Length: 443
Image 1 (tube, helix red, strand yellow):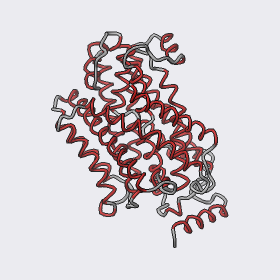
Image 2 (spheres, helix red, strand yellow; image 1 turned 45 degrees about the vertical axis):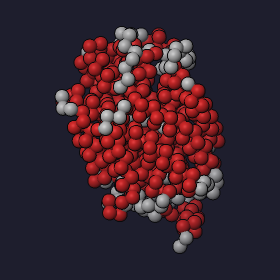
Image 3 (tube, one colour; image 1 turned 120 degrees about the vertical axis):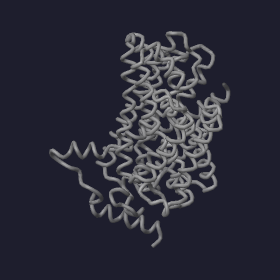
């Protein structure tokens, strides 16, 4: 049977069945437990946004400009919600990831260019994140960071490949709580709340050199292309874990499922941006106040925090780096693998054994291996992250336009298009990201 026919027939059956697809909405005492168990992709994707390289970006912003950029955490929150909700809806309704949905609207050659750029940027970030985690591990253990790069890279790669999706998803969800470390760190230092409130609710860009570049870096770190692909692909993984192995079984989504995911994404992005807010705040209260504005890596930040805020604050910051990296690296490597797999129609999925999905896992392993090699070869992490930011800054707005086109198409979305408000916000986000990309090159 042809795939379009199967999809059409499944959609018709779903309509006639009157929401018979999947588990029914629970009632009574089981509702809260079912709701908690249904959370995951939104929380994991949101928390993965605060990877070690992102933590370094926010820390440097706080060190250089104090609390001046606190408003960006509030500003980017609704943008993240709209973008991630649209990506989740594409995955839930079409039964495919972002690349699979875009394949219906754009030529494969164009998607391949985008996937290659995504893979390159993600791999650079994997390398930077492994460096951040290894530096944190060295601070805790005294063992050389180059050893930790190899140990962590192999451990994360092996765990992602060997574990079933359900186990991996639960583990990643709990790693998200590592971000609480940054909230505790900022509160431990003790902020001046009137200044915090002013800089949170009254946006401004400091009239200092490099401020615009810092704003571009924050936007590019917060609204990153790899999150688009990961969010949609995890919706597909969730459905596969429920037994919906065929594409035709995954077409369409119930209102309750969409609402639950919207809440999930709202919670995930809230904690992501709250962590971003408190990272900027913690470093503003310590490093900026002490005049230490030239730090360039998360390791330098962690070492500088110790004499200024005490060993406890430095320890929390370091532990947060390890947890954030363990969460982000599978996300970074996985999103590129999903993109290639859907473009070339490879078998894919975290529950597939390696022998059945060699292309998918090869892309995943290559991303981690090359990222680790960047560290072993002593590639400058600051320069590497700059080029990753350039790639993401150019790629993100174009991807957002493609996602918006797909999410607005009745045929692609099987009659369940994204709501108008969401489309307007994502459109505005694309415009903002185009402006940020242009500004990056001007600066």
